[in-house]
Image (cartoon, rainbow, N blue to C red; front, side, top):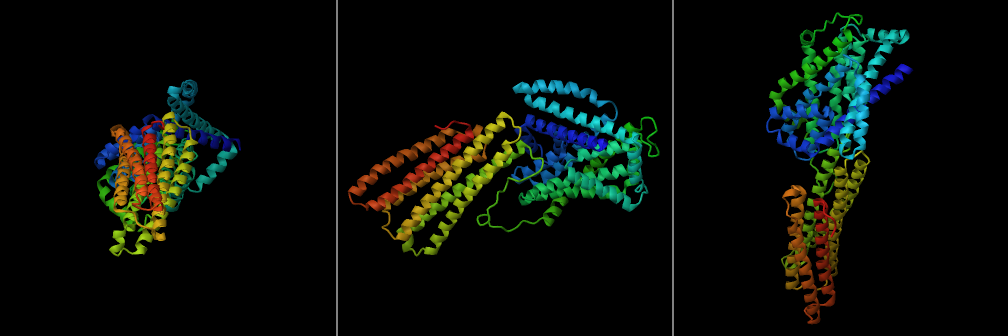
Length: 574
């Protein structure tokens, strides 16, 4: 039981170290990581190199793949670009296996305690906290590897455990198809359960280096790990859009094809790996240096497989794209009838950088939706005019448009709640001060955007109530003033969406403030004009009240727009 718990504990340390190290590197890279992926994927070769270097840097192919799927979901990468990045990520992840093989070459725990000591000092230095987190991640990774190595030694030295495990694996020693399929399936299932191919690779190295597991069985586990690690991105992409699901499926397709051709050429391919690494399959655990050579052979096999697979399939990326597009077809869904967040996905191993990106894109969609909703209000006002009625505009057309406005109001409420809940979950993680500030700004943005939706609905309801009551129509001058006020309001919404979809460094915030001042001044002008017109019996007091309700609601909407702009620009409320 002690050996079992030590094995589980060392795996936990290993996985925690990998996760901490990966997240710290992504925090250090920050938004630059996004720009690198977007800028360096101009063709399939630069895309593969980008995926390789990014994965080698963040030490997690799963993180790179999930990031790539998220970028496809957000429209930052095309499907072909994503496939090339994923291929490169397969090569980059082999660095992890080589780091692990070092743990079997010398006593890696010698470096753990100095790393812990330096890391804790840096963590208490606020400006160097992320570097301290990185060192802690590295230390936990090495400590997990060292403990795993010790556990393997204990396993060999314990007679009962050694006999039991050896007897179990000896049942599959024969190089038959079913035995190979068993270890292939075991590698896939274990990786799926643990959600870390690195952890299963560490176990494989430990078992092979102690002689408990034959090297032939070990390489089947490695191939299974390559399939198991693709399932994570497919699970994440289930709630994403079509292109993201295709990118995740392409990830699986690439690795499944790779495993198939490797199985066909396994004997000559493994012989080549043994020649390169200097490993003799006939060696036993009693041979001097066996543990080191076995771990190096597995790392070499892992690298050779992924490099060969990428070099072969990179020429067929357009055909892989056509295949995944043929398998995963888009569903014909009416966006307005079936509300669903497009960019936010509930995934495994989600990092704060990815989460903030997804929320950012979702808020952009929210903002654009609110301007479309305001456009419906303007159209509703036009239909309600006496001229439109004279031209035979049907009442059901008016009611249908008002129903869409009601639906949009309900959607805006749902979007605010779901994005806010998502950001609350993200804020529970260990975040940098910059990311915390972004989340606070986003929460303010969605609150103001929902208020814009309320204003649009209030205007639509006012126009609808007047239309059904059959009250006197607005005068021609009133319609003209309302359309002019709504044009100013729409201009402010356009400015807001330019900021939401662009870079705030290039945005002139004074334009939004100037439009707001124009709206305020025009509202005051119309207010005075309305009093004069009612006194002169140009129209009734009731019509004037409804008229000013619409004018005032436009002015409120303009204030909400400025609040969104201030939140995005990082300005305090005025």
